[in-house]
Image (cartoon, rainbow, N blue to C red; front, side, top):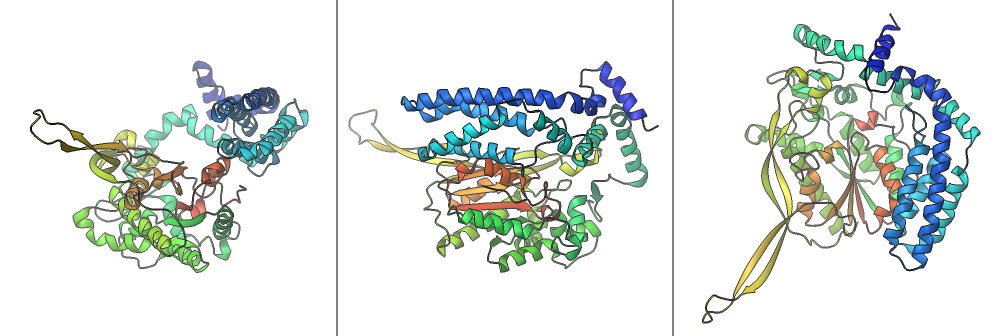
Length: 505
């Protein structure tokens, strides 16, 4: 019986065009390590050649960005080979090889604006070529030893792959889920069905965050300490002349506990308590709990702050948050904490409808049976408005010339070069911003409130560690920045992807 799923999958793989998943374990022991080493060596030699050509081109007066383009591409290819150890495991960010590649990546990204880093970039790239420019049996052995089939990280990923893609599971699971829903009203292991009128869906991790011990509780000692990671990040940014502002997004059940339990709950929850703890340590914080809870009083007239079958807020919730965050930034600027310059851009907003199929409904697996419905929302798309004046001569020569004002709307976009404010965020920063209706998320509305350009780096579900790692790989984007706004949802304080690792810049 245990071998049945693998047998069915093997037959399905042979008949189909997908790779033979059942043999991945065998392949990752006897084949993948040697192919990886060959690719690494070839990639390092390609990088060496590209860097030599780029140095000569730059010395000859060529444009730095154009000369470096092949080098950046070669380094990216080498990173792909080194960081992907096998089909199910990636190189740990604490490894020396990872740090060396990321240092090279960072130095290359700064060369155009900071040519004084040329010597450091040259020596780092030579170190990269020296480290990876040969076939290493020892490295292949270590890859198998630390990331191979006998490690928990490999087996967990393999198990998930089998669970998600197994032909038998894919055939049976949907009908089973529908039967459980019809008989027991159970929406699935990742979903909690709310109580009362309308019965909203809640993401189980959002609920577990509230009912399990606080991440700062002694019973959570095995977890990474988020406060230590946040303080460390604050100090890293200060060393670069950048202030940190932390924005913790309340989870849906923290704002609407009555929709979950059917009864009013007055407890502030872990998220608000951790926010207060961070504020007492001198961190710049934004409290969204208080205004969101207060704004519920207008739900009957303005609509709810969160979506029915989704973890995220409605456009109303996003815009409210943008206003609160902008107010905090203005207060910091007026107090002399941060210099963000003068307002320089005029933004306008226009209504746009969008259909949202809730992510919690998708998690349930029941949407294929149309159990949960699409929810239509009205977002307000932000555009930059430019007004220019010109003199227009009259048709007859007897009248005076008139001034004509031309108004042009330009779609909102990140401006890494001019912005003094950088935003790091998760899917709460992505929703309505890069998906429908686009440029209607809290980031665009924050820029509108501030009248200033902003830039953002977003990682869905990865704002605790992954988004900081993205920033570390592109640390050059901090140049010219005075304020970094770090947004993450409260459940990440316990369940953040990759925990709360220290990230080196």
